[in-house]
Image (cartoon, rainbow, N blue to C red):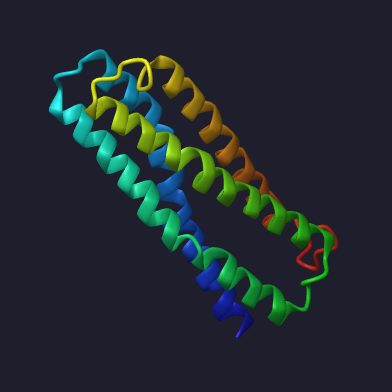
Length: 156
């Protein structure tokens, strides 16, 4: 059962978190493009699509910790420091996505619709780029912790 849960955990991470990191990373550049050409409907459509990818796949991403807890429980490592650290970093990444990145994207889209060039301008794009960079760094750290587990018996 452990291998089954681990497979689902890894698949969920690749299929859910991967698209969020890519779409969130693309959003700031697309926002700068849309800001630079206000009449470009394609640029605004791209922004809406990237935001939707972040929202939908972010919601699907809840499967990652669910299967992660199932895997950790079957391995008997729920009290391990590396796992607790990973859980905290995952919670921080999820919080950053839900509380800062998605609302920031939503605000930028709203500002573009209202032709508010200051709220959807370069400063908003830079702020989203920074937040997304931190989000991606958190996930990269979790990935490394999952592979190079301290005390691992895999020989890694």
